[in-house]
Picture 1 (cartoon, rainbow, N blue to C red):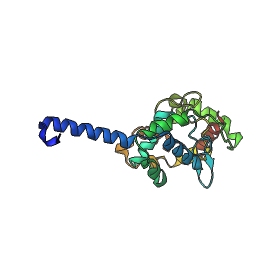
Picture 2 (picture 1 turned 180 degrees about the horizontal axis):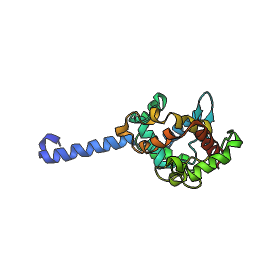
Picture 3 (picture 1 turned 90 degrees about the vertical axis):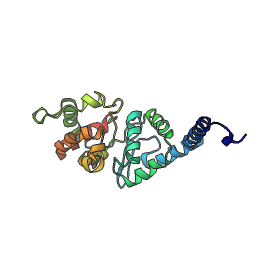
Picture 4 (picture 1 turned 90 degrees about the horizontal axis):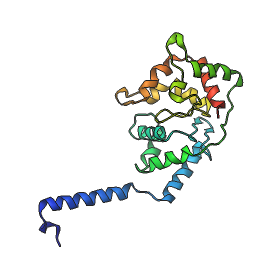
Length: 212
């Protein structure tokens, strides 16, 4: 039967259904596709998602909150977060693969790489748990949890590479808030990141680096 022989309303319904199926097929992925992407992620982020310290620090993904990780991948795709390399990598992912990747890394729990100066850990712990009352900076633990494992859109920080944490905080506005109208939750952290001095950032980063 030719589609043109049917009522216009039915033609429209059939066309819409066909488009939905086509879009669904386009977004679907196989287990083999997922495993290939995971292997690719390992190239920079380590065999167990523990991060990697090369010419630039590559962040730990292991144990990361899925909602946060998905949000960051979308931020790269939408250019809300600055990174030419990661924008290209994330843009190659189908929408349905984002939660699958996030779930994979959530279940990993390797030991942290560590390497931060141990003499900064105590000061970092104090800043993380108590904040800086004199400058109205709230404790990091308020959002990221007492164990720094995060929840929902608040990322896990425990075990994160200290040099990555420091780099991120020092470049927060440049990397995450260039478009403030679409910065989302990154805008919440901007005044906090910009209020910390380098010594405070180094201490917090050292504490998180050693936290399991």
